[in-house]
Length: 88
Image (cartoon, rainbow, N blue to C red; front, side, top):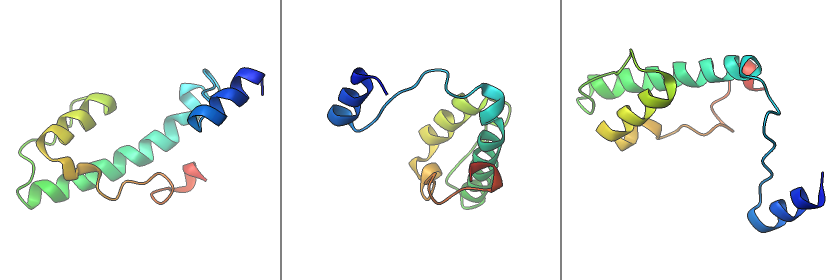
C-alpha cells in the first residue's frame, strides 16, 4: 500500500484500487446478486409492491428502476450474508 492508500484508509475507512478486478472476474458474483434481486423483485411484484420487473434493463439501471418503485428491493441484500459460491 502506498502512503496515499494508508491515508485514505485512515480518513475514510476504505482504499479504492482501480482495475483490481477485471469484469470477467466479477461476472459470477454479479450474476448471483442479479439472481437474488430478480427473486426479490418477483416476490415484491406478487405482493403488489412493484408494477414492472424491468427485466430488459442492464443490471445498473434495473436496480435503480426497481428501487424507484419500491425501496424494499434491497431489504436483506447484504453482500456479507447473500453470497453464493462465487462470492467466497
